[in-house]
Figure 1 (tube, rainbow, N blue to C red):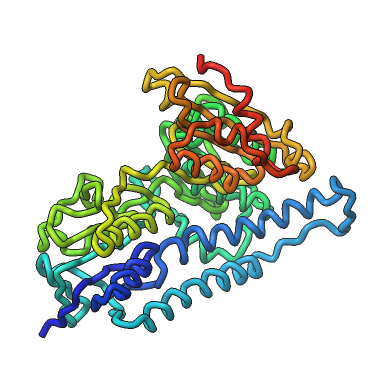
Figure 2: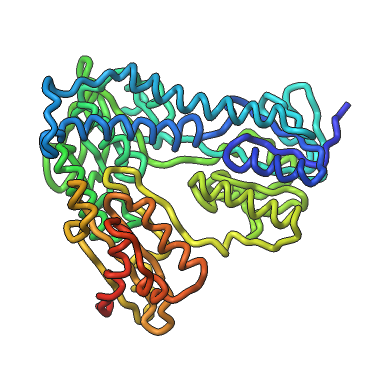
Length: 459
């Protein structure tokens, strides 16, 4: 006998709980399912635990630099990885139990724990239970992938998820993948005391960024003693005693890297292969992402897909925004769309990279006349005072409309400063609004108007 609800939500990641609250507040009877850990990737293996560890690594880094600020700590830096992990677990665990408690005490919401699978377009099974509803929302997230590489099946390796169980210091951590996850873990463990080598198949790190951003990030990491191997076209693995050997066909450097541990940071895939989507008739793309329209509706009326499983964004904030869009359309009669949002994200190395809108390369491809402003962090008073002068700020605007097209802030506070630019972009206001604003001194943000006053044609 099936239990009937007004809506079923599959998954308790960033989109699910918020959507449950919106739907129940609107008077709907809601079922939400969770097969493992409440809170999804962000809470358990993503943003919250990793940024907690980044904070520990930053503390270690600043202690090592204490003498630069006239502070004598003496005795060097000791890293207790079990304590680092315990702190991370406590912060992550508090968030996870908070989500679970919120849902289990939410009026008109019933939590079903177990793996949910479609039995038809309007029926879902969770173990022996059967749930039916006219509206079903899929929020199942994604997981790390392990691509086929010679010898990979002969060794033990880590992913971003299994790294959360590490309570020791790897002697030499080899990281395959020079993008966001790999770079954050690389700097983090280097600051804890590991030797780190990052192997990237492309000719530069984080290829989606502009060349100057990639180059500056590589320089930041190498200054801390991280080895970066680019153009690694053929990557294979073997074991020699306790050592992991990574063979790399690079344009420069040794053809082999020997390390104690291996982290694969080479991409993710959606958790859509065991949902019974075929029984519901939900269309899936070639990479496993659920096909959705601009309002996150799937190919089947009454079924939506939110978060990492829809291929419309791979961030916590895009997942949450998906829930806002769906709630606005289904509850508020407020037609919101995915295409209304502006690309925005951050890379949490130190200093962080804050990004909004188009890259310089993307602007060039449009062929439009544009202006660019750029300022090194060495010319930002706040950065000098903090002793954190690595990086730069860059902004690109339309020469005719004065609209801000995109910005990159690689530097101290860059993940926060970028929002002053992002909000003006959402307001569709000209860049002169910021240029003429009076900002507070001494801050990083105060130099954004100055940079906008020094725009030059994009050659």
